[in-house]
Image 1 (tube, rainbow, N blue to C red):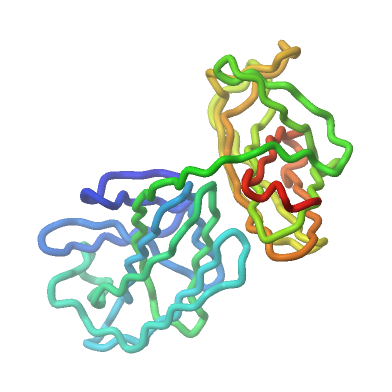
Image 2: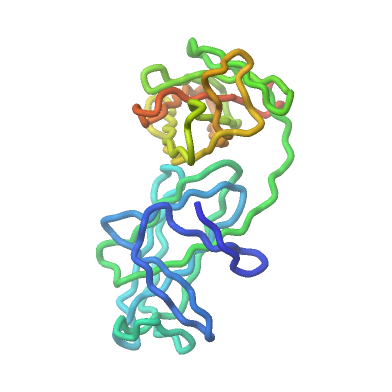
Length: 285
């Protein structure tokens, strides 16, 4: 996830994967837009809470556009649809490369994101005209909430980590030995994941976490981390934990079983600290 300044509220966001760039000049200022595709999803990784603002335009060859339909999904949820019909050409904007044509009037929409890390997928329908988008993110305030530890129902190896002189219980899990959680909703489950790294590891590690609810895929998260400077193992000098990356699971009403998998089999095991709201301790597992 890469940010740059875009006014007092919002910061611009670059997609996780490379998209074709198009430069729009509006009121004398240059703005980078990304081409959207129906066959290749644009991927954004963001940490909430906050609001993602998506500015969209169509590339026009005449005064009126064909129109376009944008579809987006947050954390593997069903795609939602935004439909723009016959956009008109913008009188205040133009492309840096004039041969492209003219940009349409900007049509924005917003996506609200809760706390934790999120993966947003964006695409257009195959019937859409040539569509471009610019992404901006406004960070929100995290509501204060008291959390309590939740033990997994699976037989997972417990690992003690020291974080800034405090001791915390984490559980080791892998693709072959996923983490299992049994809980009654409605509530939330907060999971802090950390990669296990060797001391000679350098740079950023990207990894994927998949959540299954009652046997069906609920969410897939794309996360990245670096080695933590303030966290270490209580009894292991050969490994160093990565910085914690938070995901939040909304648990619907009733009894549910969750299984948590790291999808990158070549990257070994992952550690997880599991919590749920203290106010929900009355709910028995």
